[in-house]
Image 1 (cartoon, rainbow, N blue to C red):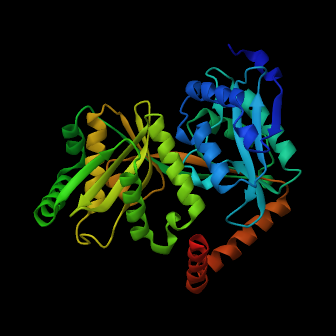
Image 2 (image 1 turned 60 degrees about the vertical axis):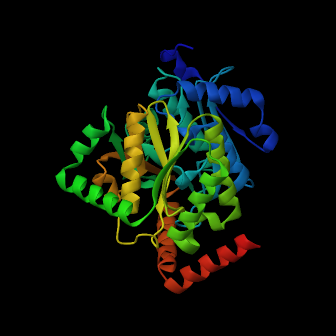
Image 3 (image 1 turned 135 degrees about the vertical axis):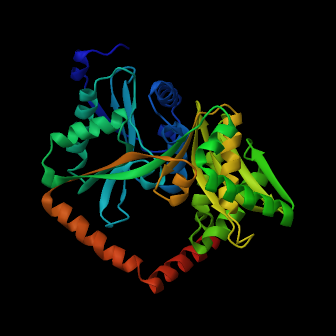
Amino acid sequence: MAMNPSAAELEPRVSLLRDDDAWRDERLRTTWRALWAQSPGATLFQTWDWQYNHWRYLTRRARTFLLTVGEPEPVLMGVFYQVRDKRSGLPKVAFVGDDQADNHLLLVQPGVPESVGARAIGEFLKQRLVRVPLVAFTNVPESSWTGRVLQLVRSDRNARFSELVTTEAFAISLPQTPEEYLAGLGKWTRHHARDDLRRLQQQHDLKFAVYTDAGEQCLSAIESVDRARWGDGSNYWRSAMRDFERSCMRGLASSGSFLSIVLWLDNKPAAFVFGGVSGSTWLLLRTGYNPNIAPKLSIGKVTFLYAIQHAIRQGLRECDLSRGGEAYKQWLGGVARTNLQFLVYRSSFDRWLSQALASLMESARSNSFLRASYLRLRKEDANR
Protein backbone atom coordinates (compact mmCIF):
# COMPACT_ATOMS: atom_id res chain seq x y z
CA MET A 1 0.00 0.00 0.00
CA ALA A 2 1.70 3.22 -1.11
CA MET A 3 1.66 6.00 1.44
CA ASN A 4 1.11 9.70 0.70
CA PRO A 5 -0.06 12.78 2.65
CA SER A 6 -3.62 11.46 2.65
CA ALA A 7 -2.42 8.81 5.11
CA ALA A 8 -2.94 11.41 7.87
CA GLU A 9 -6.66 10.76 7.42
CA LEU A 10 -6.29 7.14 8.51
CA GLU A 11 -7.99 6.64 11.86
CA PRO A 12 -6.02 4.94 14.69
CA ARG A 13 -7.89 2.08 16.33
CA VAL A 14 -7.32 0.61 19.81
CA SER A 15 -8.83 -2.80 20.56
CA LEU A 16 -8.49 -5.36 23.34
CA LEU A 17 -6.76 -8.72 23.05
CA ARG A 18 -9.00 -10.36 25.61
CA ASP A 19 -7.95 -13.99 25.69
CA ASP A 20 -5.93 -16.79 24.14
CA ASP A 21 -8.35 -17.10 21.23
CA ALA A 22 -7.68 -13.46 20.28
CA TRP A 23 -3.92 -14.03 20.31
CA ARG A 24 -4.31 -17.19 18.25
CA ASP A 25 -6.49 -15.59 15.57
CA GLU A 26 -4.85 -16.75 12.33
CA ARG A 27 -5.68 -13.64 10.33
CA LEU A 28 -4.23 -11.37 13.01
CA ARG A 29 -1.04 -13.45 13.29
CA THR A 30 -0.61 -13.54 9.51
CA THR A 31 -1.13 -9.78 9.22
CA TRP A 32 1.33 -9.09 12.03
CA ARG A 33 4.00 -11.37 10.57
CA ALA A 34 3.65 -9.80 7.13
CA LEU A 35 4.07 -6.31 8.58
CA TRP A 36 7.00 -7.47 10.75
CA ALA A 37 8.79 -8.70 7.63
CA GLN A 38 8.46 -5.22 6.05
CA SER A 39 9.09 -3.09 9.12
CA PRO A 40 12.59 -1.48 9.20
CA GLY A 41 14.69 -2.61 12.16
CA ALA A 42 12.12 -5.06 13.59
CA THR A 43 13.73 -7.66 15.85
CA LEU A 44 12.65 -10.85 17.57
CA PHE A 45 11.14 -8.76 20.39
CA GLN A 46 8.53 -7.58 17.91
CA THR A 47 7.64 -11.05 16.62
CA TRP A 48 4.13 -12.22 17.36
CA ASP A 49 5.50 -15.38 19.01
CA TRP A 50 7.70 -13.46 21.48
CA GLN A 51 4.87 -11.13 22.48
CA TYR A 52 2.36 -13.94 22.73
CA ASN A 53 4.70 -16.04 24.89
CA HIS A 54 5.32 -13.08 27.17
CA TRP A 55 1.59 -12.60 27.67
CA ARG A 56 0.94 -16.33 27.97
CA TYR A 57 3.56 -17.08 30.63
CA LEU A 58 4.14 -13.81 32.47
CA THR A 59 1.25 -11.36 32.17
CA ARG A 60 -1.83 -13.35 31.25
CA ARG A 61 -4.06 -11.30 33.53
CA ALA A 62 -2.92 -7.95 32.14
CA ARG A 63 -5.27 -5.92 29.96
CA THR A 64 -3.66 -5.96 26.51
CA PHE A 65 -4.26 -3.43 23.75
CA LEU A 66 -3.70 -3.64 20.00
CA LEU A 67 -3.02 -0.34 18.24
CA THR A 68 -3.60 -0.36 14.47
CA VAL A 69 -3.79 2.20 11.68
CA GLY A 70 -5.28 1.34 8.31
CA GLU A 71 -8.10 -0.89 7.11
CA PRO A 72 -8.41 -3.60 5.94
CA GLU A 73 -4.63 -4.11 5.87
CA PRO A 74 -2.91 -2.16 8.69
CA VAL A 75 0.11 -0.03 7.87
CA LEU A 76 1.01 0.35 11.58
CA MET A 77 0.62 -2.02 14.54
CA GLY A 78 1.74 -2.20 18.16
CA VAL A 79 0.80 -4.22 21.26
CA PHE A 80 0.68 -2.70 24.76
CA TYR A 81 -0.42 -3.88 28.20
CA GLN A 82 -1.39 -2.43 31.57
CA VAL A 83 0.95 -3.43 34.41
CA ARG A 84 2.46 -2.10 37.61
CA ASP A 85 5.48 0.15 37.19
CA LYS A 86 8.44 -1.54 38.91
CA ARG A 87 9.94 1.77 39.97
CA SER A 88 6.88 3.34 41.60
CA GLY A 89 4.28 0.60 41.91
CA LEU A 90 1.71 2.72 40.06
CA PRO A 91 -0.34 1.25 37.21
CA LYS A 92 0.95 2.09 33.76
CA VAL A 93 0.58 1.14 30.11
CA ALA A 94 3.70 0.07 28.21
CA PHE A 95 4.85 -2.02 25.27
CA VAL A 96 4.36 -5.74 25.92
CA GLY A 97 7.57 -6.89 27.57
CA ASP A 98 8.43 -3.42 28.86
CA ASP A 99 11.88 -3.61 30.53
CA GLN A 100 12.35 -7.28 29.64
CA ALA A 101 12.79 -6.42 25.97
CA ASP A 102 15.99 -4.69 24.86
CA ASN A 103 14.19 -2.67 22.23
CA HIS A 104 10.65 -1.78 21.28
CA LEU A 105 9.31 -0.63 17.93
CA LEU A 106 5.98 -0.04 16.27
CA LEU A 107 5.64 -2.17 13.17
CA VAL A 108 5.21 0.05 10.14
CA GLN A 109 5.22 -0.21 6.37
CA PRO A 110 8.13 1.55 4.66
CA GLY A 111 7.20 5.03 3.52
CA VAL A 112 4.58 5.75 6.17
CA PRO A 113 4.98 9.40 7.30
CA GLU A 114 6.02 9.91 10.92
CA SER A 115 3.01 12.20 11.31
CA VAL A 116 0.80 9.09 11.00
CA GLY A 117 2.62 7.47 13.90
CA ALA A 118 2.46 10.65 15.98
CA ARG A 119 -1.29 10.87 15.45
CA ALA A 120 -1.71 7.20 16.42
CA ILE A 121 0.33 7.62 19.61
CA GLY A 122 -1.55 10.82 20.43
CA GLU A 123 -4.88 9.03 20.17
CA PHE A 124 -3.55 6.11 22.20
CA LEU A 125 -2.40 8.46 24.98
CA LYS A 126 -5.75 10.24 24.96
CA GLN A 127 -7.58 6.95 25.55
CA ARG A 128 -5.26 5.31 28.07
CA LEU A 129 -4.29 8.28 30.29
CA VAL A 130 -7.92 8.47 31.38
CA ARG A 131 -7.37 5.09 33.10
CA VAL A 132 -3.75 5.15 34.30
CA PRO A 133 -1.37 7.86 35.56
CA LEU A 134 1.49 6.85 33.25
CA VAL A 135 2.17 5.57 29.75
CA ALA A 136 5.79 4.47 29.21
CA PHE A 137 7.62 3.86 25.92
CA THR A 138 10.85 2.15 26.97
CA ASN A 139 14.00 1.03 25.13
CA VAL A 140 13.15 2.60 21.78
CA PRO A 141 16.19 3.10 19.47
CA GLU A 142 16.56 6.84 18.96
CA SER A 143 17.40 6.50 15.26
CA SER A 144 14.38 4.30 14.50
CA TRP A 145 11.10 5.41 12.91
CA THR A 146 9.39 4.87 16.27
CA GLY A 147 12.05 6.93 18.02
CA ARG A 148 11.48 9.84 15.65
CA VAL A 149 7.72 9.52 16.17
CA LEU A 150 8.11 9.74 19.96
CA GLN A 151 10.28 12.84 19.67
CA LEU A 152 7.61 14.37 17.45
CA VAL A 153 4.93 13.52 20.04
CA ARG A 154 7.00 15.04 22.83
CA SER A 155 7.43 18.31 20.97
CA ASP A 156 3.63 18.68 20.95
CA ARG A 157 3.05 17.92 24.65
CA ASN A 158 3.36 19.94 27.84
CA ALA A 159 6.87 19.29 29.20
CA ARG A 160 5.49 19.21 32.77
CA PHE A 161 3.56 16.05 31.90
CA SER A 162 6.32 14.12 30.12
CA GLU A 163 9.92 13.02 30.52
CA LEU A 164 12.47 11.91 27.92
CA VAL A 165 15.49 9.94 29.15
CA THR A 166 18.30 8.50 27.04
CA THR A 167 20.18 5.28 27.77
CA GLU A 168 23.02 3.39 26.09
CA ALA A 169 22.95 0.29 23.92
CA PHE A 170 25.95 -1.26 22.17
CA ALA A 171 26.54 -3.10 18.91
CA ILE A 172 29.58 -4.44 17.04
CA SER A 173 29.91 -3.91 13.31
CA LEU A 174 31.43 -7.19 12.14
CA PRO A 175 34.17 -7.17 9.48
CA GLN A 176 34.69 -9.76 6.75
CA THR A 177 37.08 -12.01 8.68
CA PRO A 178 37.82 -12.97 12.31
CA GLU A 179 41.39 -11.77 11.82
CA GLU A 180 40.17 -8.26 10.98
CA TYR A 181 37.99 -8.26 14.09
CA LEU A 182 40.81 -9.35 16.40
CA ALA A 183 43.19 -6.80 14.86
CA GLY A 184 40.72 -4.04 15.67
CA LEU A 185 40.65 -4.92 19.37
CA GLY A 186 44.17 -3.76 20.09
CA LYS A 187 47.38 -5.51 21.12
CA TRP A 188 46.72 -5.71 24.88
CA THR A 189 43.20 -7.09 24.44
CA ARG A 190 44.36 -9.76 22.00
CA HIS A 191 47.22 -10.78 24.30
CA HIS A 192 44.95 -10.99 27.35
CA ALA A 193 42.34 -13.09 25.54
CA ARG A 194 44.87 -15.46 23.98
CA ASP A 195 46.65 -15.91 27.33
CA ASP A 196 43.39 -16.82 29.08
CA LEU A 197 42.45 -19.23 26.29
CA ARG A 198 45.88 -20.90 26.39
CA ARG A 199 45.70 -21.37 30.16
CA LEU A 200 42.18 -22.80 29.92
CA GLN A 201 43.37 -25.30 27.31
CA GLN A 202 46.30 -26.30 29.50
CA GLN A 203 44.31 -26.69 32.72
CA HIS A 204 40.99 -28.07 31.46
CA ASP A 205 39.33 -30.23 28.85
CA LEU A 206 37.90 -27.34 26.82
CA LYS A 207 35.15 -27.41 24.21
CA PHE A 208 33.07 -24.73 22.51
CA ALA A 209 29.69 -26.11 21.42
CA VAL A 210 27.51 -24.36 18.84
CA TYR A 211 23.76 -24.95 19.15
CA THR A 212 21.04 -24.01 16.69
CA ASP A 213 18.37 -26.49 17.82
CA ALA A 214 17.65 -25.30 21.41
CA GLY A 215 17.71 -28.94 22.53
CA GLU A 216 17.63 -30.02 26.16
CA GLN A 217 21.42 -30.20 26.49
CA CYS A 218 21.74 -26.58 25.43
CA LEU A 219 18.81 -25.32 27.53
CA SER A 220 19.97 -27.17 30.65
CA ALA A 221 23.51 -25.84 30.23
CA ILE A 222 22.26 -22.25 29.98
CA GLU A 223 20.03 -22.70 33.00
CA SER A 224 22.83 -24.27 35.09
CA VAL A 225 25.24 -21.42 34.36
CA ASP A 226 22.61 -18.73 34.93
CA ARG A 227 21.70 -20.13 38.35
CA ALA A 228 25.36 -20.35 39.31
CA ARG A 229 25.99 -16.79 38.15
CA TRP A 230 23.00 -15.10 39.79
CA GLY A 231 22.06 -17.43 42.64
CA ASP A 232 18.64 -16.65 44.11
CA GLY A 233 18.34 -13.77 41.67
CA SER A 234 18.30 -16.03 38.60
CA ASN A 235 15.13 -15.89 36.53
CA TYR A 236 15.23 -19.67 36.30
CA TRP A 237 14.01 -20.00 39.89
CA ARG A 238 10.66 -18.64 38.69
CA SER A 239 8.76 -21.36 36.88
CA ALA A 240 6.82 -18.90 34.71
CA MET A 241 10.00 -17.09 33.62
CA ARG A 242 11.75 -20.40 33.01
CA ASP A 243 8.89 -21.56 30.78
CA PHE A 244 8.92 -18.24 28.96
CA GLU A 245 12.68 -18.35 28.30
CA ARG A 246 12.55 -21.93 27.05
CA SER A 247 9.52 -21.32 24.87
CA CYS A 248 11.20 -18.30 23.24
CA MET A 249 14.40 -20.25 22.56
CA ARG A 250 12.51 -23.16 21.04
CA GLY A 251 10.46 -20.75 18.96
CA LEU A 252 13.63 -19.18 17.59
CA ALA A 253 15.01 -22.62 16.80
CA SER A 254 11.85 -23.65 14.95
CA SER A 255 12.20 -20.58 12.72
CA GLY A 256 15.92 -21.22 12.13
CA SER A 257 16.96 -18.13 14.10
CA PHE A 258 18.47 -19.57 17.29
CA LEU A 259 22.23 -19.42 17.86
CA SER A 260 24.00 -20.25 21.12
CA ILE A 261 27.62 -20.85 22.08
CA VAL A 262 28.37 -22.78 25.27
CA LEU A 263 31.83 -23.21 26.77
CA TRP A 264 32.29 -26.62 28.38
CA LEU A 265 35.18 -27.19 30.79
CA ASP A 266 35.78 -30.75 31.99
CA ASN A 267 32.33 -31.69 30.68
CA LYS A 268 30.64 -28.97 32.76
CA PRO A 269 28.92 -25.90 31.26
CA ALA A 270 30.99 -22.87 32.24
CA ALA A 271 29.74 -19.94 30.12
CA PHE A 272 27.21 -19.20 27.39
CA VAL A 273 26.05 -16.64 24.87
CA PHE A 274 22.72 -16.97 23.07
CA GLY A 275 20.45 -14.91 20.90
CA GLY A 276 18.40 -14.72 17.73
CA VAL A 277 19.54 -14.11 14.18
CA SER A 278 17.51 -11.72 12.05
CA GLY A 279 18.90 -10.98 8.59
CA SER A 280 22.60 -10.32 9.09
CA THR A 281 22.28 -9.34 12.77
CA TRP A 282 22.77 -11.53 15.82
CA LEU A 283 20.77 -10.00 18.67
CA LEU A 284 22.11 -11.27 21.99
CA LEU A 285 19.44 -12.10 24.55
CA ARG A 286 21.42 -13.45 27.48
CA THR A 287 24.98 -14.19 28.52
CA GLY A 288 26.50 -15.68 31.63
CA TYR A 289 29.38 -17.53 33.24
CA ASN A 290 29.84 -19.73 36.30
CA PRO A 291 32.04 -17.74 38.73
CA ASN A 292 33.01 -20.95 40.54
CA ILE A 293 34.77 -22.44 37.49
CA ALA A 294 38.24 -21.11 36.61
CA PRO A 295 37.60 -17.98 38.73
CA LYS A 296 40.98 -16.41 37.88
CA LEU A 297 40.39 -16.56 34.13
CA SER A 298 37.97 -14.54 31.99
CA ILE A 299 35.82 -17.41 30.75
CA GLY A 300 32.96 -15.07 29.83
CA LYS A 301 35.13 -12.91 27.57
CA VAL A 302 36.80 -15.96 26.00
CA THR A 303 33.36 -17.36 25.16
CA PHE A 304 32.24 -14.02 23.76
CA LEU A 305 35.28 -13.72 21.49
CA TYR A 306 34.75 -17.23 20.14
CA ALA A 307 31.05 -16.49 19.58
CA ILE A 308 31.76 -13.29 17.66
CA GLN A 309 34.34 -15.00 15.45
CA HIS A 310 31.84 -17.79 14.76
CA ALA A 311 29.21 -15.20 13.79
CA ILE A 312 31.65 -13.61 11.33
CA ARG A 313 32.36 -16.99 9.74
CA GLN A 314 28.61 -17.45 9.33
CA GLY A 315 28.43 -14.24 7.32
CA LEU A 316 26.74 -12.08 9.97
CA ARG A 317 27.55 -8.38 9.86
CA GLU A 318 26.38 -7.10 13.23
CA CYS A 319 26.37 -8.34 16.80
CA ASP A 320 23.81 -6.40 18.82
CA LEU A 321 25.01 -6.40 22.44
CA SER A 322 21.71 -4.88 23.60
CA ARG A 323 21.10 -2.19 26.20
CA GLY A 324 23.37 -1.39 29.10
CA GLY A 325 26.78 0.23 29.36
CA GLU A 326 28.76 -2.66 30.84
CA ALA A 327 32.53 -2.28 30.37
CA TYR A 328 32.94 -5.60 28.59
CA LYS A 329 30.88 -4.34 25.64
CA GLN A 330 33.45 -1.68 24.80
CA TRP A 331 36.24 -4.21 25.45
CA LEU A 332 34.65 -6.37 22.72
CA GLY A 333 34.59 -3.46 20.29
CA GLY A 334 31.00 -2.36 20.79
CA VAL A 335 29.96 1.13 19.70
CA ALA A 336 27.39 3.04 21.75
CA ARG A 337 23.94 3.84 20.44
CA THR A 338 21.10 5.71 22.09
CA ASN A 339 17.78 4.36 23.33
CA LEU A 340 14.86 6.50 24.42
CA GLN A 341 12.64 6.20 27.47
CA PHE A 342 9.61 8.42 26.91
CA LEU A 343 7.28 8.74 29.91
CA VAL A 344 3.93 10.53 29.63
CA TYR A 345 2.01 11.37 32.81
CA ARG A 346 -1.66 12.15 33.23
CA SER A 347 -0.86 15.27 35.27
CA SER A 348 1.99 17.08 37.01
CA PHE A 349 0.78 15.56 40.30
CA ASP A 350 1.03 12.05 38.84
CA ARG A 351 4.59 12.82 37.75
CA TRP A 352 5.51 14.03 41.25
CA LEU A 353 3.84 11.02 42.89
CA SER A 354 5.57 8.56 40.57
CA GLN A 355 8.99 10.02 41.30
CA ALA A 356 8.37 10.15 45.05
CA LEU A 357 7.21 6.52 45.20
CA ALA A 358 10.13 5.42 42.99
CA SER A 359 12.58 7.03 45.42
CA LEU A 360 10.89 5.34 48.38
CA MET A 361 10.92 1.91 46.69
CA GLU A 362 14.58 2.30 45.69
CA SER A 363 15.47 2.86 49.35
CA ALA A 364 13.61 -0.32 50.25
CA ARG A 365 15.39 -2.30 47.52
CA SER A 366 18.79 -1.16 48.76
CA ASN A 367 18.06 -2.63 52.20
CA SER A 368 20.03 -5.89 52.19
CA PHE A 369 17.71 -7.63 54.69
CA LEU A 370 14.55 -6.79 52.73
CA ARG A 371 16.15 -7.82 49.43
CA ALA A 372 17.40 -11.15 50.82
CA SER A 373 13.95 -11.86 52.26
CA TYR A 374 12.29 -11.07 48.93
CA LEU A 375 14.63 -13.35 46.97
CA ARG A 376 14.15 -16.16 49.48
CA LEU A 377 10.37 -15.90 49.27
CA ARG A 378 10.51 -15.79 45.47
CA LYS A 379 12.62 -18.94 45.38
CA GLU A 380 10.32 -20.74 47.83
CA ASP A 381 7.29 -19.76 45.78
CA ALA A 382 8.94 -21.02 42.58
CA ASN A 383 9.67 -24.40 44.18
CA ARG A 384 6.10 -25.03 45.34
